[in-house]
Length: 453
Image (cartoon, rainbow, N blue to C red; front, side, top):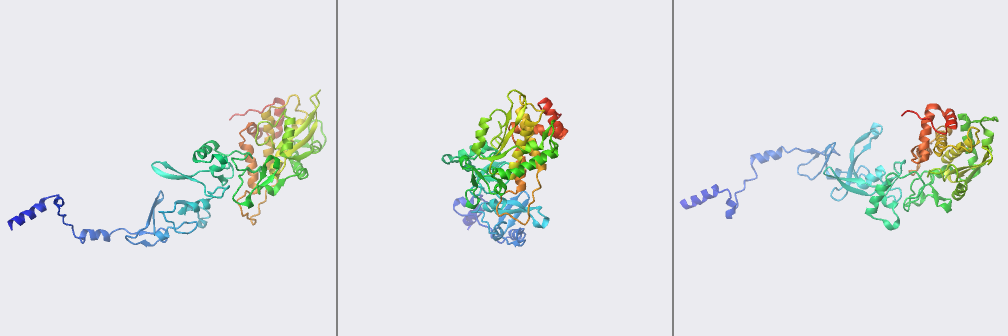
């Protein structure tokens, strides 16, 4: 018996009794302390149904900057499609949405399927109608997902997948990355990007996934096209441009630049009204541009192929023999056509006014800046307000006539060429001295006045 007691005492004293082949005794699972711990385990409330989540029931735990949220698995619903989200197999995200109960104020964050998030907030390619590609990055030690796209500089939801900007034979992740770096913001020209065409009026991307939204071909020899929004008021003939020219002359008379009576010290409305207004195609406009390459209409991707003012002068004197015609590119929306006519009318007015001499023409930046200023003022003050019928809801996301007019003004304001530089100088001077004093100063000094910044 003494031998048995010695072996038991040795086993109790050894800290590694299990190493001898005998496992250490396990405490029974009925201790008072552990039972009390489970009875005081905190319970959680489901964020969706506000009911308690039973103990030991698997549930979804989400930690956001706004706080922690827990959901029953069947309550973790996409706020867009109202279907259950399976976090293990379905990509999801959170974002805030407007609350109708608070007059559109942003409400708390809600879960979305990634595809539903793209559909709800418009993160869909306007060209192929698919979700924009997502690139995962590491920021501050955490994984982040961001949409990659090229966008229109004005229309916020006009986004497209980067690969559409590549030629068909150069698709790939590396090339797409270079496109994103090089493109930045898409410019305000009608030139196509990759294999995607752009509207000649508003420069939006042509959808290719829906035949009903494809752009309408115009000027087939030049490969131009016009979207359905710009087609609402498109101008295709010289007769359609005549009332627009009269609106421009009304605006010139409002500014005090033309008079209804004949005058020897200025320009009469009659002389401006007699100028032929011709709506022509792209080739005809460029043929005339090449034939009259001396002078204006050089340097802007926005204006040089859209309008032209033709005139004749006496080779032996500084007198102008008159403006022979104003040409404007066809198949553009009425507001854009009107602004081009206002631009060309400014050139015509300068050619006809006795204070501006032919042999001492204005610097290009000055004359084009004045023409752009008049075009901008005309878009702002020379046209009737656009009436948007709230009952006529469009089924697509095309811009309204009011938005198109805002875009045409935006193009003038943000032009980075010599035309835009001249406009900004002219606009600053106009704000200080008005249009008539500005024109008088330019006629004397062939430059814009300089004001302090």
